Length: 62
Image 1 (cartoon, rainbow, N blue to C red):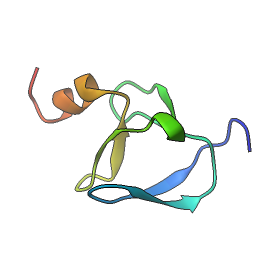
Image 2 (cartoon, rainbow, N blue to C red; image 1 turned 90 degrees about the horizontal axis):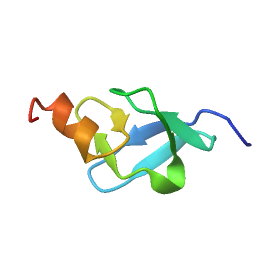
Image 3 (cartoon, rainbow, N blue to C red; image 1 turned 135 degrees about the vertical axis):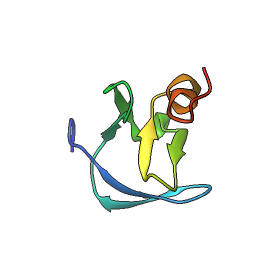
């Protein structure tokens, strides 16, 4: 399952794996995020962020 995009359902404190994979793509930067490193996401927008920097940009806080 190396180098396969995962499909996730983002929840407030965790996520469900809808389709198995090893990474997702940051909605802001386009960087690959391995699932074991995934820490930031939006439940409302259902999208992942590489770090707090990208998450802050999404919310308009720079």
